[in-house]
Image (tube, rainbow, N blue to C red; front, top):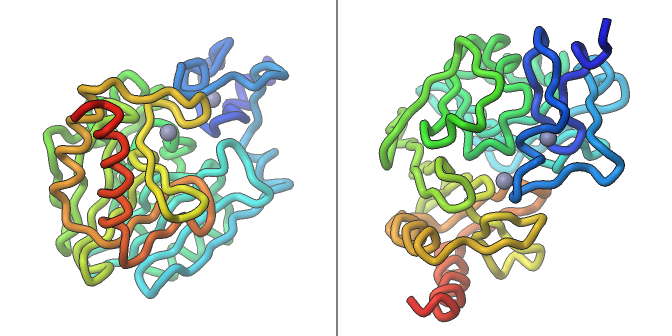
Length: 272
Ligand SMILES: [Zn+2]
Ligand SMILES: [Zn+2]
């Protein structure tokens, strides 16, 4: 049997391709200007192999929010968020490892009512999570071309917003991907909080936010895409942002001000 039929997780981005089909020669998520193919060549791993030498670290951010990361770091070092809410818990984005300890932890918190995604760099093994917790997966319909492993739990949404429950909503902002979205949670902080995926990159200094077509390849957004993104994002009410790619990428209390200051630099450069 071709080993690739079982090793279907791209080691560079963590996307899991269908188990019952041969994997592509190159991962289409990585073979895109936003990402990159590993310089040592395309390689794949399996859930079993990953579980053997990696674990999931769960950290409490506040009473309603936890983040989940894989240790040692795997793929793009993405983090997922578990949001606890009376109307039902939400997993925001995914990490490509779902081990028994993580299943037990989430079950103790009441399981999941939904999994929702910011954009295709985080789809990973989303179907396994959805099957385990028997919940829908919400993905913006603009990103259909990047769904390579659609399962029975997938529920596409479209338009500018999708209200979930407890004043939590998915907000489409575009930019990084045509379907790039954020999760807006009014009650998570005094002024509103957003889980922003890669729609906004929060800098290491925690003093700036960036918006790019590609972060690893440093490719800016076209002017029109930036203008649309800015128009949508600046209208949102938030004082807190949680980013997607490293631990501590948290702006609490002053996020809107940092966002506006950072976006003013872009507006100056774009002549807007
Ligand atoms: Zn990949
Ligand atoms: Zn991304």
